Image 1 (cartoon, rainbow, N blue to C red):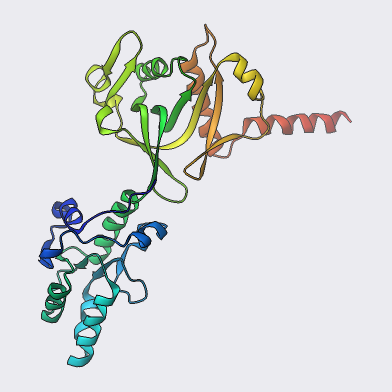
Image 2: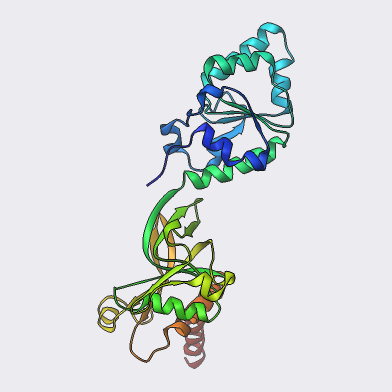
Length: 316
């Protein structure tokens, strides 16, 4: 699922304090939006905002010092032609950056064509960076996943598994060991770029953890501010299974690392068997530490395989 709507007034209010911009033209077009086809085709926020460009229409056009000079430093006929061409780009918004003043012809054109135009003292490069980051997240592919999403030793870890295996109780124990909660039960996942999944908690469930027999726990109220996180990048999925499921569906020592596809991105995955008496929290932390080593290029299993190979060659 990918949202495809953001209006000019929403964009203006979102960055009113950051960019300190003013709405200088096109006040009657507050509901003007991005073209839906362009949004669906965009691979990132870079496709939706940039400097004035006649080749890439339908995006937020930024007018800095050079762009304003291009629109004004020519004969009156050429200036009028260049400004009128902007209408054919059908931009959702024009932004004057670098403290530039809008030419009268540009103001008139925006009013006639009902194109919102904002003005800010901030640099054009800063405006582009801010808007690209916002639009990348706003229009990101997204989904929801059932589980407990946590910050464990600095790594974003999703704990999933069959119902009744104690995912929330495990989360509570991990929190008591100094780790942080992002979300319990329902986790909103966003693909913010080509290789990164970001997980957040739905507003309705923020700071809450539900444990059978106890009910809802306010983790922030019980453990303090450091026990909760606003968002994390998903780097590992820990899947809890019963013994019979492990023996039926998984190898005890897989030769290749397991992965699970999330929004088109492969995410590392480990399987942990739940049996009475096992300290699952310790096993999860061990799996996280091992994943951190793998991300640094240290693969214990492959090192062991190489040791065996060396021993066989030495003995042969």
